[in-house]
Image (cartoon, each protein chain N blue to C red):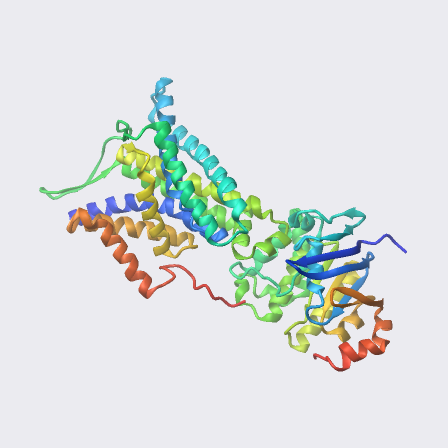
Length: 304
Length: 244
């Protein structure tokens, strides 16, 4: 039971990171109907920006950890958001009225551009940082196994919950959120009601990138390293999470992220680490056979 | 004769190579109800959409209240307080009725007190919407969707309201309610209205003036009564094509 509880904690932490990335995939799919394959690399960029900001702050002699974390969070969100905006502007907007596969190909190209850009400018080796957030709590100790909740795990989960609360408030209650949902449902009608569709799409990319940056920073803190290639696997996992949850559905993306995180963690703990990806993708396949639109997705056909 | 609110001059527009508008002239003065009638595919809906820049005009000009809006972006035109209940109503299906109405108010950045007053007006005209406020737009009946589409357009306090086939597919009783509401808005609020209709009989009785469109061109125009008396109109749109 203790072992199970420990895996549950680990799985939720991993799932939070996947979920934050998955939201970016699902938002963009919802509004422009394309898979932004460069989104995993945006997550990687977020990790690097967090690392660079951290190093700059430390070299400036800053030592208060909460302050450092806050600044790193804000800077990486802001800078990565600019990356998201530029990617949309350069690689997707000119192709919006082109044939369906064009933005997809452009996205794959953009993914290579971003990862190679990091490799060239930052080097190919893994970049480690010393653990910033240490310590933890022992929740339960049965003598031969202790359930640990580390502080960094608390930070990851709490940050995710806070950001998701802000994000869902924004989508469901603010004018921008309404505009975004309007563009998702009917772009022409949104424009007839004074919504600047191009700007709304840009903002969607910006917000998706900012959330991916948070995931990148959490990854850096949790695993203590970043590298130029980390966006690929994490991106594929988060994309899987978005599809599992029902692409286009925001709660679905988070649910899918948690599901993938838990499946991976439990499989690694009880069966074999080597096959954790196989397990995650197998469950995706099984779910899609019985629920083709994912866990919370809606069918394409609807009453008009 | 007062300055026109909307003046369209020699307007041409096309979808790809197919020319849908071939030089349309049309004028709407403040406080008028103007109707545009014509067969399916004559270009009536295209004209409405071209006023909003979708598709863009290929030639000719559109002026709203003396200002040239021919090349403006769709969302900027909407912010001038021109509102449309478009073909197919285009209710946001996964938004509540209240949110759909809010979208209409957002269109012109109206302030809180204006919003409350507009909402009040819309719910007086269409009390049915009041019971449906928290329901999703996609679950409404056709008549309710039409009421919502008009209500949403009204929320932005439009200076010009354009309605595309507001009675299409509705039961005669509901259609009558919609026409009554349009008449009321015009008489009591002085609202200027352009209404496209296939139901020429209703439309011409409602409107002060009418235009007849055939194949992308205006072929006839006159007061509602004049057009109703025209033998060609009776033959083409009333006796043969009576809809309700």
